[in-house]
Image (cartoon, rainbow, N blue to C red; front, top):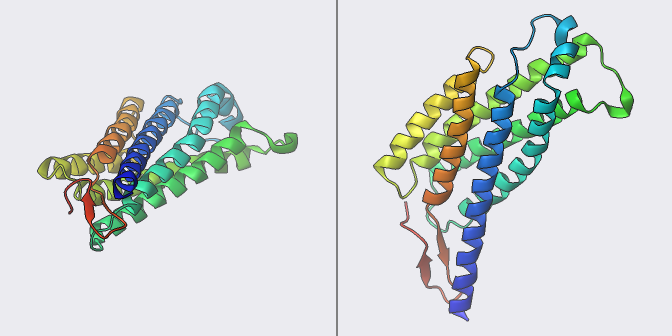
Length: 225
């Protein structure tokens, strides 16, 4: 019975790791599509034409973000929720920051969805479109800041040790610079999107977990922080 339970827990952890990896990859592709958009105009009157030029990029990014948030959220909850170690400030801060980033992606999902899918065929004035476009980049800014804090806090607590800390610091630096996509060139925004995928996959594979058997014995899936 104990062996069956342990085997089931191990399978659950693998599934959650793959969910987190899928979420990171889908998020990266969605952000990569957004990075290919031309620079947004500064005049509200030109917003409609800008949205029409980038319609396919916006719509595909919007669809991918929906599945990305679900996969990443479920995977992270499963991995970090499986921890039975003593409470960790770094883990708590990191998980909160990651949650903030995912909530920001939900806001981004809603805003971009309104740009490309007119509800009841309601045509928005140019000023309203300008507000939605600026909100899109504002949500991106918040998401990258959340990823930056999570990169330092969570990567610092992986079983990769020093390598994990270095990865976290470099990823956080890239995310902070990438949180201003309206100031940085498209090639850098694309590179930051790829960095999200690389960091997310690393975090999923190197995250420390520990589960407990019903009989009270401890089954260590990896080293405890």
